[in-house]
Image (cartoon, rainbow, N blue to C red; front, side, top):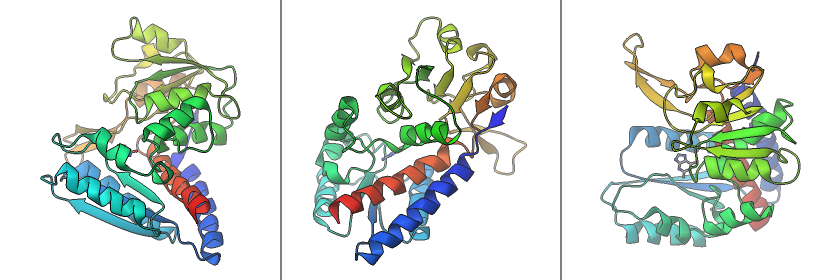
Length: 291
Ligand code: GUN
């Protein structure tokens, strides 16, 4: 069983990013990322801080907006418009999900697609569906694809089951893997909570991507002997034995599933560090394009 070390692979990508930032800076361009968080959700705050920290480590420009939960939609959209017009900002990320009174779609559509490093804008979703490489691909699925590539796992002709159909992970993951070319050319099935015989469908996978958002949902009956498992889940569960009283677990019951696998990602230390690395890479790509 091969443990796919996302932390190590992310470090390699971040090293490449560091070099790319140096080249841009020599041309007088510092890649800039703006991260916007509305509300107090502790997990979202932690993500936003780690994105900000990584920008600094790579020598990138970072601006962070932590806005109160009562922020109006029009104020948020006004901020997005300001960032669209700011030449020091190449990437704009509004942390999802926003509070209930904000229409997330309206906010995402306000972002200039050329600065939408999350790949959530309809123009970028369409480009991914079209197989047009000029768009931005959402960071988590992009990170999962890169983990497979870096680990020497062939996707061409493979039966891949994507468990989950969200716009952040499941749907773009399926599109990426079915598109033509390196890291693609897979036979993709998208399964979800309403899929009949879910465990059986998942057992058909050479590569299983679990992105259903439920702790330890995938057990050994979901996994064929010799399969590759990519665990996208980040779920905080109570754990009286941990000093914090809780710990992070994936969507996969690692202890039971790992012995059956050819390769598997751990949580934490699998997909998580890759998401941030790909966000930095997308922001650098934007800076290369926009100058
Ligand atoms: N919330 C969870 N994952 C993401 C992400 O990749 N981007 C944004 N904007 N919000 C998220």
